[in-house]
Image (cartoon, rainbow, N blue to C red; front, side):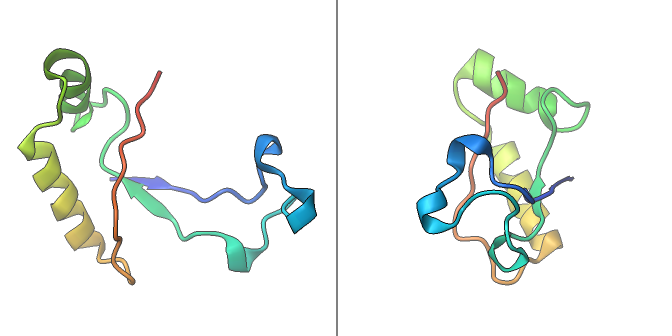
Length: 89
């Protein structure tokens, strides 16, 4: 599984100085490290992700099962309440 490091600096397009959101993100506002099932087209799950995106138009039950297993092994507290797919261009 691939770790997703949280940002430490607000992206310039997201800065909202009126709320004090610019520059470094305070540690108490940063999310914890996340997880991704694969990298785009990697030798693990990445090929199945690519096939779902371009060939079949949906992601297989096998990928959903793999995501569930990844989260069970990771065991984050609190448990996630939603998942997302971030497609690559």
